Length: 146
Image (cartoon, rainbow, N blue to C red; front, side, top):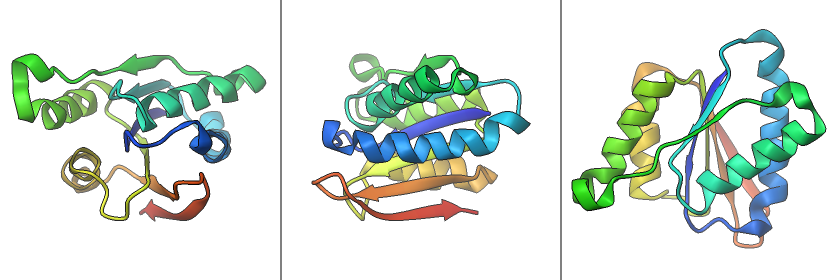
């Protein structure tokens, strides 16, 4: 499984239980049947780092779910406003994901999350899920592709 994470910087510790639960379910479904494990994320506070922490939590309880982590920080100083989309494409090219998890608190998503899902991942058929969470950490809905 080659997994990428994307999502809102507004996610906080209150969202961690839902992220852990969902990620553990996804990993249990995919890991026994796939090889070449890697987990990529944008190295930003919020969804990226919280999903990385959730992955570490899953692996601490079920070692078979462990996979190496590859952070892809945006190069804001050298790339300016285009740094986020450029980072998304670098991450996609390096990881060649087989699944994605996106987590957000806003229905309209943010520019970076929207770019990653609708301009990078879905056009090439990468399956995945968007977790929409409220401010209190509750799951509002899960949208899955395909």
